[in-house]
Amino acid sequence: MKLVTIVVPCYNEEEVLPLFYDEIIKVTDSMSVQYPELEFEFLFVNDGSKDKTLEIFRSLADKDKRVRYISFSRNFGKESGMYAGLQNAKGDYVVVMDADLQHPPAFLPEMYSYVKDGEYDCATTRRVSRKGESKIRSWFARKFYSIMNKISQTEIVDGAQDFRFMTRQMVDAILSMSEYNRFSKGIFSWVGFNVRYIEYENVERAAGTTAWSFWGLFKYSLEGIMAFSTAPLAISSLLGIISCLIAFIVMIITVIKTLAFGESVAGYPTTICVIFLLSGLQLFCTGILGQYLSKTYLESKKRPIYITKETEEIYRNKKNSSADNKTAADNK
Image (cartoon, rainbow, N blue to C red; front, side):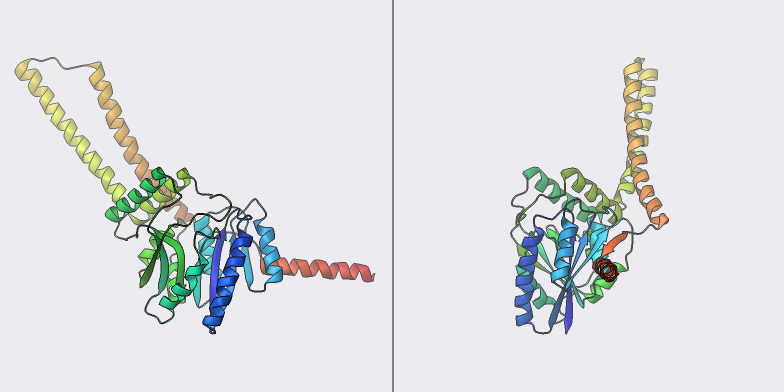
């Protein structure tokens, strides 16, 4: 028998979790008939949700022994949720997917068909449209992939998602990259392996609202650029060289115009403009250096990527302990 662990990071997903569970059970039960060698476990990760997500996990764990969960002490972010799921997955194969049903469980049989014979180490989906997204958000997303692939040696496929069906070998390779500042889209590409892309039209959320704001996605894109490219450092150096050349050329022109043609040099306005230009460039380049330095600083602290507060085992032990104490009290 081969075990498939389905990892599902969640943050405030109480509305969609019952729908997801019903759908994933339907698909995995069908796969168990089609592929008798497969067993499944469902590993949910609660990323510090403020709604009833954890209560739903407990309820599912009570009625289905295949359900496991990890609950964080606070919100650490989706990247930490995915890492925790991969780190605690027991399966020979590991699936990472979202609970909002934008990653359709119906693709799982096809994904398994690509990896089961060893031809591919990973099967993943790639959106060919961005139906349901605003035009501005879609435009920025496409530009991010375009810029990222120009400045980085790690190719990130436009539209590729975190919905992946991976072999244990690939999962172990991903876990070996235990960096604190994580950008999984880049990590998935950097580790290599043979990947099969399945194209499909974008699917909107089944319920609830996304936790990703435009600003959140923008910061996430900067995280990816800093993690997999040193181009911004080169750009800051180039801007410094260009600024020096421009200043030198302007100085020569000013001297020639004053000595040869007797023209007066513009005073206060010119000086102020030059000061603001050069100061802006200096602050911009210093900011880039500061971003890379801050990432290095956080990595050097070696803080844990996440902290676990509760798992299904801890929950069951507490529940059994409470029941034992109640029985003991009744006997007295």
